[in-house]
Length: 375
Image (cartoon, rainbow, N blue to C red; front, side, top):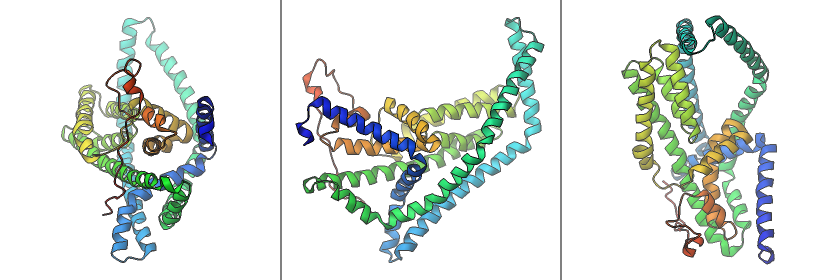
């Protein structure tokens, strides 16, 4: 029926549909974000579940054991972070002295090329500090609500993971019944490839966090940088957010180094080590760990991070890339939405479509055989 509509009507319906989905996500983010997170974690836990089921482990136990592993992993990260933050708090008197020295040097540098006296600078800093404290108080008033939201999010996550794994066959039947029988082969290919891509991506991210923390934190520790492990784990986690996370990680690393030292060489060392580790990660390690993955162009990646952050905060930023990858898999296999798959992808035509009509057409999408390694 929709094939009979004019092209402008079809495109208008597509844009309205996308807008409606965004509105639903914004309004129901507290409901949908835990479910989406549980969906991706469930796919990552599927190999463990299948392994246990092959060993005749009862289904409920085969679901609970992988969830317990995830909870232990998250608890380990939280314990490590709290221990490192505790060390940082213990060094607070020394940090206060170092910050005072840095401010004094900055004041002298500013007064060297401006007419603003040190007393005026101190008054300016005091005024801005009071403003920042007021803003912090306003933010702290809503901290309880945010914290309670996080606890609800984490509390619901294991329940959602259990139910998704337990009712996965019902969910898959629903997906197949949504499409015509003639399209079931494409649906099956898309499901298997989605599972493969998400598993590869998420497991790769876990490995990336581990080796980034060890490499960055270990090297900084060897060269004598204080709070090296904290810098390593913060940067490794923030690096999961495409492009934006690495920039914030560099900034936090510099600030932590400045507060722990009165010299500039540690800052240069931290930035240099981060640059080397990032080069190894982007060009050698990560491409080998995540071999076959959907390529998303940089523009869509950055927009996805900002849109995900505006919709659902930090969780939306972290989930933006796997969601875009799943959408690209679906779009590439749909006759009505192939142009959106091209927009999300990174496959640049070798020549301009304006000049060469050949590049105005979409190349066939290669699909998998409909099977997946279930080890």
